[in-house]
Structure formats: C-alpha cells, structure tokens
Amino acid sequence: ETHFDVLYHGELLGTVVLHIAGVHNVLNALAAIAAVRYVGISFEDAVKGLGNFHGAGRRFDKKGEACGVTVVDDYGHHPTELTVTLQAAMEMPFHAVWAVFQPFTYSRTAVLLDDFAKALSIPTHAVLTDIMGSREKNTYNIFTRQLGEKIPGAVWFPQDETDPESNDERKNFADVCQYVCDHVEPGDLVITMGCGDINKVNKMILEELQRREQAASK
Image (cartoon, rainbow, N blue to C red; front, top):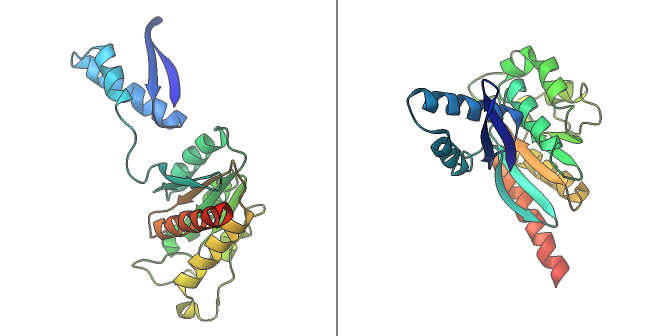
C-alpha cells in the first residue's frame, strides 16, 4: 500500500490509500483527483475509486510467492519506466531486488544504452536476457554484453556474436531462470521487466521455485 495526504490551497482534504507502489502512481492519483474534482465529484468518492484500483496487468503485477521469494512481472521497457518502478521496488521492505530485464529492439538498446545501464544499476541485482529484436535485424551490432558491462555486478549469458541467428532463446531463458533460482534468498523480490516475452521467464522462475519448495517440504 501507498499512503499519502492531499492538500488543496493549504487545506488538508484527507488521506489516500493506493494498492499500487511508487511516487509516479501518487502523481497519477493526484492528477485523477484534480480532474474529478474539476467536474464536481467529491474527494471522498475519488478516494473510494482509487482504493478500488489494484493495478493494471503487467504493471508491478504480483504473480506469486515461493521459497519466501515474491515474483512480480512488469511491462516497463523504457529507461524512465524502469527507473520509477525499480526505485519503488527498492523502497519496499525486501531483502534484495532482482531485476530480470529483456532488452527490446536493437535500435532502442543501442540509442539508450547508457540510460538503460543507469536504470538497471538501481536494483540489488540485474540479470539480462538476450535482446529481443522483434521486427529488426541487428544492423547496430549491439548485444546484451555491451549493456551488461555498463551495469555493476550484472549477469548475462554469452551469445555467439559471430552468428547471432544461432542463439537459442529457450536456452537463454533456461540459463537465466536457473541462475536466479540458484541465488535468490527468502525475503527477496524478483521482478521481470520488458515488453517482449519476458513473462515466459517469470513463469519459469515461479514454477521452478514452487517445485523446489514442494521438494523441500517432503
């Protein structure tokens, strides 16, 4: 939950409770309150409406818990989105935050490389998948390695840069899942991030942690 007070010309209107995290969502809620008050809706009704909102799909979307680890999925794929989401995650009472990021398109990764590196330096740990090229060919000669080298402590899995077409996404995802599951600890948060098919990795991680939890309980 996020709690904040709302003032209008110095007058305290009351407290709002959101079921979503981050200062950016406080700003979104304030904009919503201002808009509905402008058209005559009371502050109390605005608070009630905001309290009924529990977030959008793939926006800090909690998928489950296993082995004491919370697993979340997020659609953020631009440095600004990554920054506000990861800052919010780091303010929560988790032991460590693991950002598992899938870069999307070669052009965006190449042009915003330093911005991505800065955003992905926020969490405790950053684990990177191969770049999802989508509609593009890798005419930029950009690879995950170049992003990972700019992030302190980042982990990624080597690609064959001489023959990019030979790289296997399934193996890359399996390597990422294995590494995360082998190193997370109870009290940690794992957040998969990206607009491609990174949600597959999220599912793999949660299912593997659940499998390990069930095995440990036998």
